Length: 236
Image (cartoon, rainbow, N blue to C red; front, side):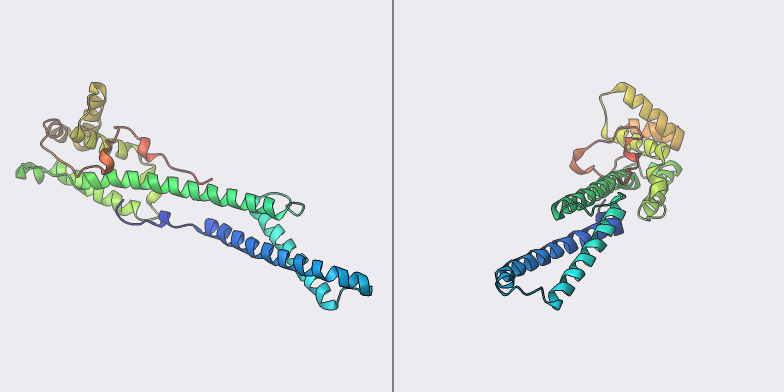
């Protein structure tokens, strides 16, 4: 896909985990600083036999409250009873694992969308040196369908409909397979049948005769005439 889609950007859940990770890092630094300051106070407290100051007691109470708040949110988002007994390192590990899982799912879904988009864009760019056939009903039908699908794919509210439409994508992949060529006779025969079913026999014959071209695939990859590219990636 040539344009950047919303899938290329972190979603609200992934963004929130990033924020929690940053908050935890800041809280950990604050904890270390407090521990260092307190360790310097211990000799003086022992020598003087005086209790902690009110300000330090208040600081500790605030720190305890903040830790409890973080523990509650982390446990809730991880869907576990509690993380209060865990260390900061264990919290951090859980946070990064969850965030990385969301990022992996998003990137996998984005790649799937880009793959489908490339198929659609190639069909949208079908062309024929035969000017009469280039303006035929069959060619117009294929290119119009591709334009409609691309518009729906770029719309988050209708994207899943396109991604789950295995039959339509199978026909489009079949068109491109006949253009790109294959040494597998069975695959070619199936592609011909799929094109005839979706666009008619006239288009399948023109494809077999090499009268139609399409923009090249990125990386030189050839599409398979099946619905594998339409599998919906589910976020973890």
